[in-house]
Amino acid sequence: MSIVVLSGGVGGARFVRGLVDVAEPGNVTVIGNVGDDLEVLGMHVSPDLDSILYALADLNDEERGWGRADETWQALATVAELGGESWFRLGDRDLGLHLVRTQALQRGESLSTVTAEFAASLGLSTQLLPATDDRLRTWVTTPAGEFTFQVWFVARGHRDEVDALRFEGAGTARPAPGVLEAIESAELLLIAPSNPYVSIAPILALEPVHDALAQRSVPCVAVSPLIGGWAVKGPADRMLARLAGCTSPAHVASCYPGLIDALVVDEADAGSLDGLGDVRPIVTRTLMSDADARRRLAEAVLGAVPA
Ligand code: GDP
Ligand code: CA
Image (cartoon, rainbow, N blue to C red; front, side, top):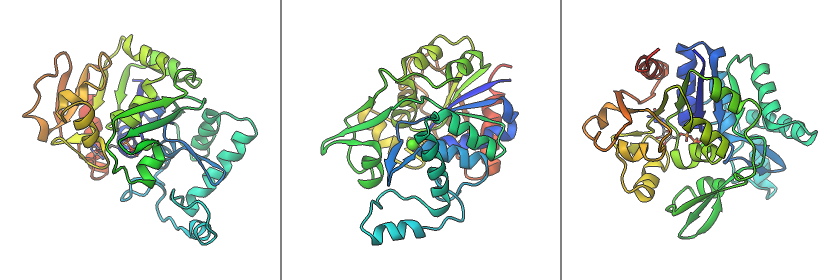
């Protein structure tokens, strides 16, 4: 069965890792968010694509949730010593990837080509596509002003409440080669347990991607990133409360109007399934605490979808 997953970084990468353990990895295409991308120290960094790549290649740091395992930070310490830009944490091992990607982009290669080359070099058969090769950047409007995603998230520790989001470039950015084809030929569409507002919305802000999902003829299933109304990590719960009014499964589903047929929710939310309307709830344990838990979640998702 060919499967397409829309994914952000941490939650998305964990989910995708479990998915390729239970589905044929070569049949899975991951469409990754690039709204978080940034230029730092002259390098192009794609944090969400890298989280997915590292998780698929078993190079990721499980505890931290992003970056590489066995990481060291010597280069960044030097940057700080010299008064350079050190707010965005880039580890020594991680740096190698950013260097190669930046050089390839400067040579004129597309982000999707570089990403495919990385996946091949790491021996992956899963296809990882950036949502777009064009520039798309998430901006966050807060009471303290408008910030780029990473300034809000990393530099300011996502402490500012969010009033609105803007996806710069989304109006003209084209889906990367293969994105629409993958969605249109998929037998199952999945939305990972990623932040709906800052990880999935930037992908859906590409109108052709949104429309391809809206016009699907196969099931689309989202996995909720909330457990008992709380985010496992990060600001998704606070954002949902402020922007959607509440953190119930129905409010999570409301982030994907007309786009999903089912929502996977945690057992902790089994008592608050009101208001889902046409969206079928699939109740299971959704905490991906280890490889077994990740696999069980993927099995539950695949098992709930008619073959
Ligand atoms: P980011 O791009 O690194 O911020 O990562 P994502 O947007 O892909 O994932 C962030 C979301 O993942 C958060 O809202 C978390 O609540 C969610 N998340 C992380 N781990 C788990 C888990 O084990 N289970 C579920 N259901 N959600 C998780
Ligand atoms: Ca992200």
